[in-house]
Image (cartoon, rainbow, N blue to C red; front, side, top):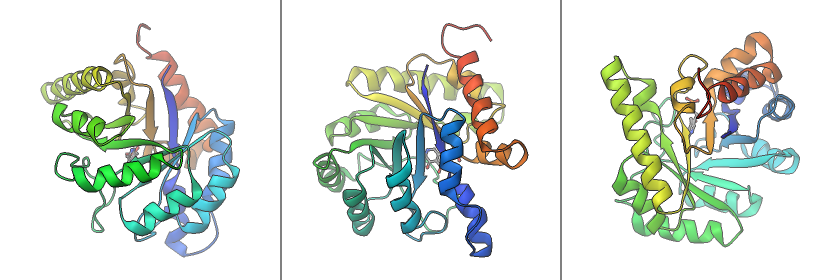
Length: 245
Ligand code: PXP
């Protein structure tokens, strides 16, 4: 079964709405682990709009499962990753005006800088993944710059407005998985996945990790983080490849 990375950024978003000390994303990470999360994911943004340096440090000290740091290639962020040494870094594009990470990193265009950053992170023992659209050129370029994994942007599937678009997006993801495996990379998926739409993506053979944030945090408001994670894990088991829905 693919592992579930729980992105806890939006617990910090609620905290920052009041610039106070609750809810604490560190508690959220512990509760997510108790609910069965295989990985805790956080994004230390350059503007520190939700997760801050204190959170990043405490997560790196307390998380017992795999810790995945989403990050841009800005120098100060790379320096934090080098110091904290999360198990995995997922390189993402970052624009200040966006609501959340929109689309994937253009690895083809930024080969030179990515090669340097990947080398720096890998030399600290960090597994490096690139968050990209499921395009063969981007996947091959990610392997070329030294990434060991890619996280395929599932947004086209999640935001599809009809079945034709949805089927096309699933086909692109399936092809992306094949290309990724062909260049010996682990293939992850994420963005816009919810309790309602995760089934078709979970049923695609070859994904080894999903990173899901907004939908899990939203459900946690009503049922608690532990139960919200448990419910998402249950869907991943129910729809895993080879199982009938
Ligand atoms: N993966 C990556 C690389 C992301 O940037 C995000 C959003 O922070 C997610 C997964 C999670 O997306 P969502 O909050 O839509 O589940």
